[in-house]
Length: 390
Image (tube, rainbow, N blue to C red):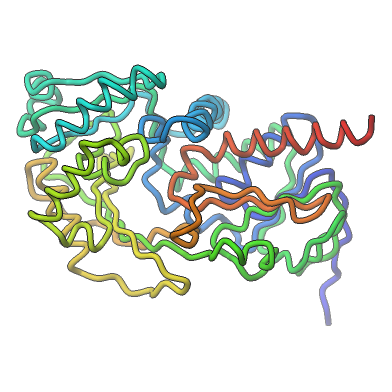
């Protein structure tokens, strides 16, 4: 016997309960709209819970991404306060071990930081040595990004969902696949729904919905190897940690002239790191363990098999950062949507039809800018409908 299928109605339907979907749901519900979120699984299991939990302002390139990150930080603070999940606001520390890494920090501080309004402080070697009982004294300098935050993603996402449900009246329909969307209409595995506007935030699923609109972007998937490790000594680190290698990855630094010299240094001394797209990040978790990573493997169909040599590179870099042996507790694959190399945009907002909008991240900074994107997209939808009704 077939189960009875539901027919529902809402103001705004969101497809996907990852950070982008939740951000759009929050922005819409905060404006007094009825919001329904559809998620194919029983709980979020994708990019939004597999990451470092770093809400990174410092690493974003100047312009739109920096503005979105600053907006997102304010939303994250509100969520943490009202949803009651773990969050740190001590910022990030980007450590430099070599002269080439120091040069990137110095160029950034002398030029871009002051010109574009980054809230940062350069720490010299004596200041670094004074941190955490000298644990990081083997580094030559550091950049303290004071606006950066850190959350524990696998706990934060469920807490945000509960907050949206109980405080803002957002309805969640889990274990439900949205099979088709059109103006005012969703076809799902549990029934038909009608909505004034639909926002598709389907992560790296490029086939189920709006595939024709996505095709010109040449969508790919980035697969990342991640580890959770346990230090020998208690760390009690309050900062998210980055290393000089991150200067080759994040747009705030990667186009500086000194970054090219750093690239050449890594190419000459440790080329495997470039081949595997490795740059080390470390996020202390609430229990004292540390999430470390990551590597980058771009492919239309990413393989599920981890390479042990990549994990060993990450472990080596992390042990060099903390200056002690580390025990691996968990291994997993991170994942996020990407795009063809010649498509130079970090995210896409595509108006598929009058009542359907698709939003996709093409980089791994959804936690950092997703809330700001949700606010921007929903504001445009609401204001656009108001303009058309006037």
